[in-house]
Image (tube, rainbow, N blue to C red; front, side, top):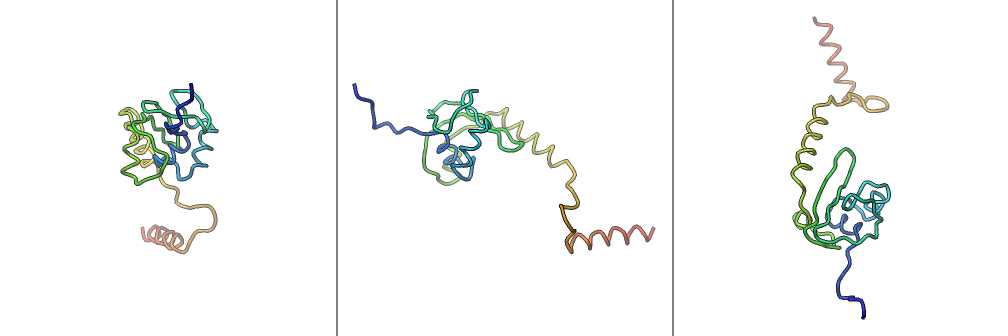
Length: 134
């Protein structure tokens, strides 16, 4: 019995790149190696073959996606094509929205590291000059 070579295999790092979760395949492979991507709640390697119906958990920064694979592709297409490759769970969407709202509610740092820019200095001068008037 010969193996069926007509069926194309889809590696998870290529699929994540095609689904536009990562900008490059190497970034996808690094995330998989670091344990930020799990397949059906198991750690995997970048060469793991995925199938339709598999559940992926992807952590990118503060954001966590829980998705189900709907279609397979090795080629990176447009964003609308990429969105048709998976469906995100409702719980994952609400959790991402809560994290986004929490991050938006946090105050933004006034200064970046280093010396203030010309614009920053003008804002500082305006703040201190308005305090002197009271």
